[in-house]
Length: 88
Image 1 (cartoon, rainbow, N blue to C red):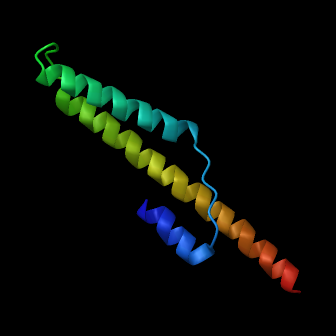
Image 2: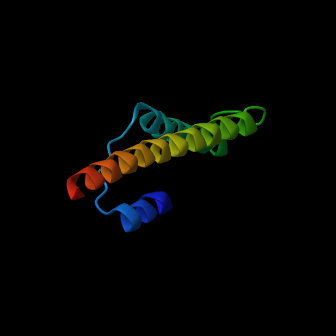
């Protein structure tokens, strides 16, 4: 969110389109939430799996964030190039 707000402040309008990695991240987060709640309720034994699951979701979150920054940076470069061509 901070990246999106920063981009909007620097470049103006921001169109956000979900990517497959962003959708995978949300799926992983909700799955992890369900597993943790199942573990806390005593339905699942996740003691050995808890840390690797959190690490996997963290890795997916970072990868998704990097992908969005990559996409927004590329769009900013295209928009800057188009603006320079228009001003000539």
